[in-house]
Image 1 (cartoon, rainbow, N blue to C red):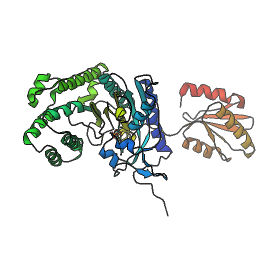
Image 2 (tube, helix red, strand yellow):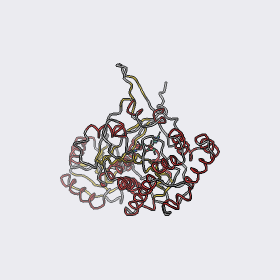
Image 3 (cartoon, helix red, strand yellow):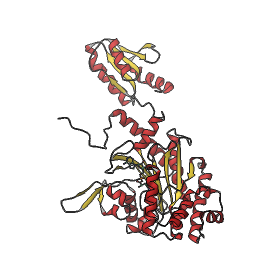
Image 4 (cartoon, rainbow, N blue to C red):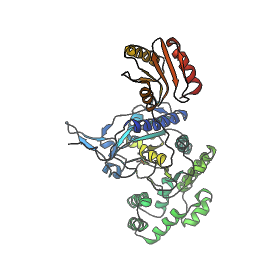
Length: 437
Ligand code: HAM
């Protein structure tokens, strides 16, 4: 019986692993140059950690288990609650702001489909205890820095943001109770994924009063938040603004000004439909989509000012995002931006003479110790066949061991020269140094 891959998981054969590592390298490089340091936590956490604040949707997607002592555990579906738990435990000794990144493997019991798996890697960038709007913008800058690093442009991907704080206050001003407000967020989070009629139905269910629905609808359809004055927005929406509304708007404007100063405003746009599925967000929220809007978000995040406190710590503001490897990989492949990562050798060693097999091993040992990427043919064979093997392995040079020396063949130019064995390393280093691989 042949065993199948568990639904929604992946094997990483060397070719896929090379691509995966290329993505991880870019994630790490960009994190470090933006001033973040790496952390990780356990894969298993107590189920209650997610029940506290992640929200019903993610709890329904948990892989959970009970250990022999009857404790309810979960395979982490995200790392943000772990981050909050870890920061809480050392809050007094950590220099602030805490700027941490991580690349956890996370699990979600989803129905697998394109861009949606059960096991994935997720790059996380978070700032805890930093200045509000500026830290939000710094996280977005780091996300955009990564997108540009892997070759994507502002025409291909867009950061869409809004403010949960503003929406929550507008809902409150319209007299919407917190439970109904949650239902509005739920409907909005599904908006792009379901037919318009299905959204209208959910929206009407959440807001049965037609006048309230029309008012909230006017707010959601108003796109000029960036440029309009508070008074003009209030008049358009048909509600008298509170201090909290003005504070939330000021926060958005500060965020927008920072995006501009960072030079990434062309990558970002305000979009009231962005609310995020997770329950802990409290302020600016955003998702990053391909411009064609064909796939689920490549990244999502925002401000979560209550999570540390809810998990038993102090009230410290926090903000960050997660970017999945699955959607990023599809995006890069579909846009033709995935690099050619076939494995390469500096040198492939071979010989025709059986008696020289020990000399081949000796040379291979020396080359490898000299940090020259080397492999060899274990059997003696005719040179033509050996060179074919060398080409198949993407070798830059072939070293043909002969009686009394080595013939070094440049596999790019076909040029070949006899070299004393003792000079091979220096010669290879010289040539590799000048041409590269
Ligand atoms: P999230 O929106 O649940 O946020 O996930 C972030 C990204 O992870 C998504 O945009 C998507 O690319 C990827 N992702 C999530 N689930 C799947 C899946 N089943 N298959 C493929 N990709 C997936 C969070 O997890 C937050 N904890 C992010 C965060 C960090 N917020 C603040 N800090």
